[in-house]
Image (cartoon, chains in turn brown, yellow):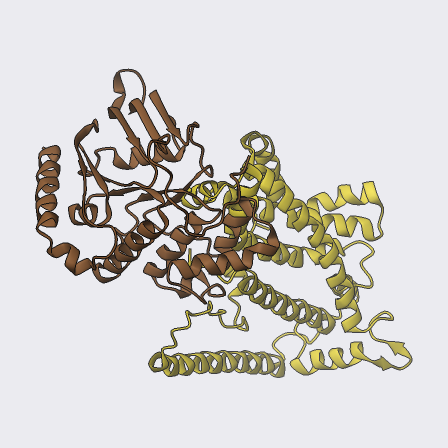
Length: 272
Length: 298
């Protein structure tokens, strides 16, 4: 059953004490079988409450992307359970996904890429143009609906990918190193915009990165995973202000530097 | 005939149209445009020159009378044949009652219907082969087998089955056109980019929607190459299809003129097939650039 066609408008964060959006219990995941099997992840348990912006940090190969794919429902756990909104996750379910590459459909215009996601989410045809315009506006790309995908820059493509992931009123965003392939300047602008957007809408997010700075800047909580098999090395709330402070101001806070140092140390230790 | 000649060879004749340039990104680079245009003009000039040299050689050889004009007709004789087959002379209309354009038109119609049906069948088979592995296992040898057969070989069987009217001709063209499309479609559909398939699943596409929204569009450029190849093969098979009861028809015209040693008319028929074939290939290429403008942007 398609999820209820919520609007993409700002929604109030769910009241505290409600069920977690994502809950992972006793998770263990491995590739291969028998004696050749490689345990990639686990044992691992965590809960992500509504409105949280969780950043998964860790060295390459620690299984952070695997964890994200398990939450997305692309893979299913060998052991333990993953629940999203209380259900076993399936791709196209209640989470929107942003990959490292934009993965837009080149045979569709920018607007039609988002329109397709709306169609699959059950939004009636007549409402789609307006919703597409609203989503593009939200990612700072108003007026580009008619453009061809290859006519816009890599950063703009990733913005479209975010809009597509949000389409259909998704309340959970899963992002797998979405800014890793962008140049530094573009990356900073997208980080700022994503931070603002998540603060404004209260969308729950799981964001995978190997950049400590990105983790501190974006997250309301950071989890550092150890090297394979990935387990939780550090689970840290990031108490930086979510609104009101500009990016430079934020980076200038003493707490920012302290968090960076703490997470950075944990990542280095995890990498072994 | 070798099974499916590569596309390059088919279109690389001296009169082949310049390669259609894929639509450039809108970032116009004025500095680069001028040398490109000059290169294009030079290439066209070179081709015209080559054509003129060939015509001159041909004229010289016939003027020297090295061979009898029955064997090697002069350019003038072929031109005369063109005039005679294009109008009414001495109460005779065109060649055997039909003008050259009419003969060509009838053959083109056969190609359009026959190869069109073959292309459609190839598309369906290709999609099935590309999406269902067991269909591929079952059908692949049959398609490959059909692909290696020269059309003239199975034409005999088609005549026994369907008589000597239109049916066997259309069947021959359909059977000749089907395999390249089926093979191209099957391979393109089977190799749909997993990254985009995953992206479609991530926005909630079901199995069939993944096929329509990702697999088929991503396969389209390759399918269109298969279609071009199919029409090329159908084109080169039209003379085979018209070996029996082929008049009116351009292949029938060539066969009939051969019986009377009218080499000028035979050469004229060859030119008619060659030139119209190049035009159709250019049109198909233009069409595929229109239908799949994202080619090269994935």
